[in-house]
Amino acid sequence: MAESTAGHCAYCDNLLGRRPTIDHFLPKCDNPHLVYEWTNLYPCCDGCQEVKLDKSEPAALRPDEDGYEFSLYFRYDSEGRIRVIVDKKKNPVEWDRAMATIRLFKLDNRYLTTLRANALTAHPHAPQRWPQKPVDADSARGYINLRSDQTPCEYRPFRALYARD
Image (cartoon, rainbow, N blue to C red):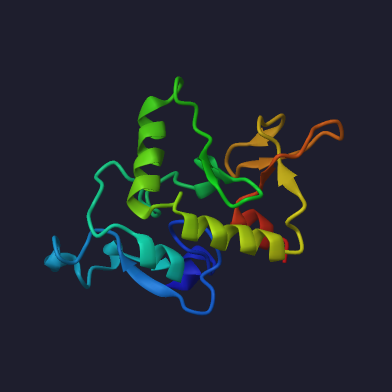
């Protein structure tokens, strides 16, 4: 199952680490009929498994839905804090869905923030960051080319970092 996310957590995009888990997107207690349903199971890092709410959030982004890519919704700063990059005014529905995802998985939780900051600091490509406002973006992948006069201010999503390894 971890191959489906290239060894990354389906929720926070960090590497699964030494203790990967499988998570039920819709909680077992409310959906016992989905306990063994493949479409309700996702590879999850230990941190997300530990802090995820045991409830469902209908608006939350599902990692396997068409067109979903973590980097199109979220960015991390050097301290591991998550930020929604969807424009609230231009696309309020997707912004609300991104915020629902943060609430459900507690992606702004201090514990997860610390784990991400440590992972970003330890990674050999971590100094290369994303700009706050993209100049030249490939929307299909979320990759951004920096101009030499731009100030780097946000880290790439984990998959973009680890794709270089």
